[in-house]
Length: 406
Image: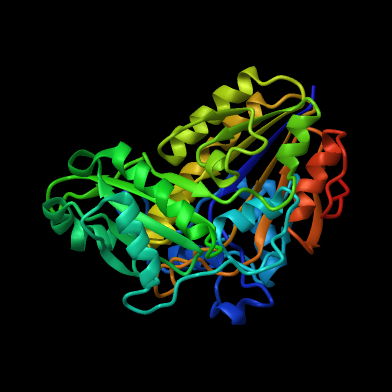
């Protein structure tokens, strides 16, 4: 019985790409800088202290993938732990460093053009777009209209939003139009309604995503974003691994926001989870009952949304260590032919200024009972991962990517 798991540690980059200078990310290294901060005592909090302790991920090959990518050993590396499976790193060919492009490319579809983004001006959105949005939505106006951190702008404008009924609209360096609104005072259904209107209006601007960002609380001190986030994403530009696997009799189980990222395309079952650990629990439950020719595809979003974007080094380190501790549970449930692949979709170096993603290589860590220790080196595209999974499932080859020989 052949089953595969694709685990995306959202934003866990392992060193700047050769073209990182085009994005202002020349020295980015999400995992490397987190490990260094831990070693120096700059990543301590109530949950953790000291060096980054990830023995399971290290024996799978993550630390060695980092070294292959950037040429430096992970700070605090336990030299006694040797890789037991296949490891390497992949270079992104898509022209952006955003979530959809990274995920599409790892399933065989690089994006050969740059998505449009909004300028770092205030206001940042085109006036006709906002005029049409207000008119069609029937809202009294908007707040924000700028580049911002989601948590910061909610704290700054949340009270005014409650008083006026105006949604908070903002963006980032990604191709995205984000709308934050209070679940109770504005209403979750109403937020979803106006997001659909915004998605229609932004299509002609070549904007990839409209994201609903609901929150609760009554004051700036207790506003908190909820797990009812919804990404309205442009569908992939070509058939992905998910499309081909499901069309050829396989099952694709989306855990977390994967379904949103692919606009539902190629997904045969979608299940949710709020936190990384809940998502891990759901993934394990799905594996227990998964049948032959099933791909379980999981995005562990907390790394990016809770810690990378918020530049929380200690929180990010703790999240990696929590993830590491769960690896044996996954291995115990994997059958003789099952394989798992750990990767990322981009970087989000918490030691960098600002709150944007960083252009980095991503790890390619493949493990299973039949996968031996080997350095698979540099992969020229994330699409090599999708091509390798297509070969594993013995389905039609993908249009992009080269097979990783295991």
